[in-house]
Amino acid sequence: MSMFLSLAFAATVALASTTQRAPITADIVAAFERGDYAGASQAASAAAERCTAAPLPAPDHCLDLLNAAATLAGRAGDNAASERHARRALAVADAATPAGHPDRATARNNLALALSNLGRSDEAEPLYRAALALYEAALPPGHSLIAGALSNLAGALLDVGRDAEAEPLFRRALAMTEAAAGPTHPTVAVILNNLAASLEAQGRTAEAEPLLRRSLTIRTVALPSGHPEIAVATANLAGNLQARGLNAEAATLYRQALAMQEAALPAGHPAIATGAANLAATLRALGRFAEAEPLYRRALDIRERALPSGHRDIASAYEGLAAVLSDQHRIAEAEPFYRRVVALREAALPPGHPDRALALANLGANLQAQGRLTDAEPLLRAALAIQEKTFRPTHPARAATIGNLAVVLHGQGKSGEAEALFRRALALREAALGESHPLVATSAANLAGNLMGQGKRAEAITLFRRAWRLSSVWPDAAHPDRILANWSLAEALVRDQPASPEARTLLRAAGDGIRNRVSAHPGFDAAASAELRRYAPVFRAQVQSAWTLSTR
Image (tube, rainbow, N blue to C red; front, top):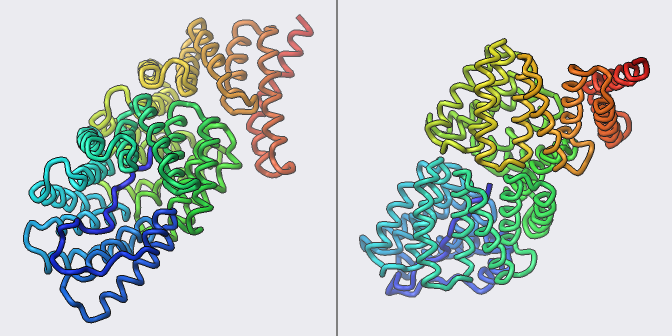
């Protein structure tokens, strides 16, 4: 999913004051324009402190510097400093300007930006609304500050899961900005990104891709090479490709984005954590779990140091780490991280928020994987109840929860009830992702396993074959989904025909993939040993198949 980008207002509007204000100096502007946010923030903060420490020729003399310090601290990742400067600016604006003045709107917008970056979107929304109302009353229709306020308010709604409400606000902001500044203005790129994020949150990823490509093109032309905003645009396009199953292309773009962020930003900047987590997620999808885990741990470490306790991005980092541990079958090790995510999201979000549903669903899936089916079922049902209220009927997240609930019911011997859910999950994924997406293969294989257990072998084998064909999207034979597809179809064939040459070929391909996975480990370490043990039934089946064929 795309990263939302706020439109930060570093200074007040031109008609702000009849007095001469302290200027935002050329060194601050130059550092900002080349993407040196840390340098720009440090210079702006120092200038604001010097200004407020000196005798003031007018009450609002330092207002522009305080606003600049607030927004630049946010760009540099120091959100606590951003809030501090923004509150000082708001106090000055309210004391020194008349009621209804645009400076009051700007100060409220900048404080809202800081609160949004701190994960306090519930506090930010009323400030964004107040800023928008003040701008609309004081400025001519279509003014750039009105467009920016619309975009930022939409972003606050997006943060709390109100995606459908955010979309029309982004569209209004985009139309205003294109009319006023032209279709290639850098602000257009920001709003295109944010509109794409709202579409992706609604599961409309194909609609979002051209917006993200246009945003990247605008930034690449307008900004110097390696600029952090080019990295953000690159990463957002990668996220869209990943969501549509194009993981190899996404990984290449994520690596490019992370390299740009590491070169342009200080080592502990939260954006680097986001870049590391994004790349890790794509490596996970490619089955490269050992490479993904240290990236997730790096993201968590940066976020815990840079962000306030309870921030939503810390919860996301725990979630990613738990997922990659689960991928490596370290299920019990992952459980406390999933529980931490649930606690963080329950503390930070309203009861019906979709992110709370995701946390419950992930914990439920973890417990299911540990065989604790009675513990898992209520969590998955609670998650699904939220998702059915907040997501459109074909949203991919609903399919995942329904599929996991079906696995639980199947494990409890409720095969008929599980079959209906497996079919529903498959249909949802086909509608949302297209018939050739790798997750469709997962749903097809799950339904096939259920049908095989009920003795419906013909349909089961058809579905296993479909999953096997779809698994070829992974070019690496060592990908876990390709191994599983070979293994599952082979087992299904052997049940009908113990001496099956095709099954032997499939098992041999699965075994080759397993050996490749094990050989990728540095030495024959504990992780390699554990992986080999997990796949031991494949090698037993391979030997049994060869023996049966030789004696028929």
